[in-house]
Amino acid sequence: MEIQKLIILGVLKESSRHGYEIKKIINKELGIFTSLENKSIYYPLKIMERGGFIKKKAVKTPGKLPRYVYSITLRGNKEFVKLAMNALLSEKRPFIDIDIPLYFLPHLDRKEVLARVRLRKRFLEKVDKWLTANLEEGHKFSSHQKLLLRHHLNLLKAEENFLEDILRLIK
Image 1 (tube, one colour):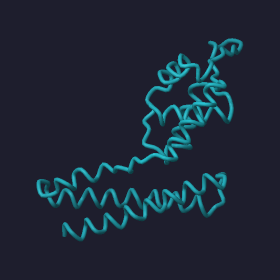
Image 2: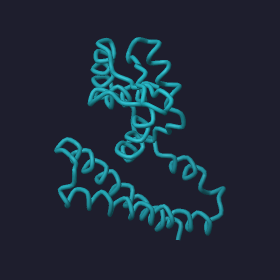
Image 3: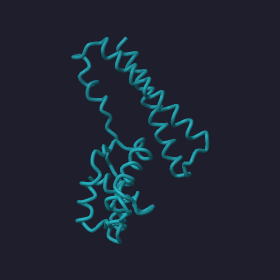
């Protein structure tokens, strides 16, 4: 919940937004950087509102149901900074789901593992192309966002090398 709270507060620091817009930004712009699954945005918004981190205001449009627009509070700003600073010092290592089945590799069918590792490799190649294209095109990303893209590209290259090691081991 802490990362989700950090993300939502960060999105609201940019500007006030309605729930669907927050969810769309998280999925479209931040989805590549986080494994956060945002099935319902309204539950975390309700919890954060109760905690005094955000506030909502009904905005009425003629002929439509009122929509709620959320904005960050002073308390939310303080919480955002605290969460961001804590995340910068996080001692958590990145855990990758592929590691667990590899631990149990002797118990898995070799041909099926090879097929899935090759599929994973193709997926990573697509992500690699996306990251590289977005870095080269001078896309809409700011310098700090491009730094994130380069970080993920470096992580991706390490995983691609690791997959090659797996393929060599299994063959």
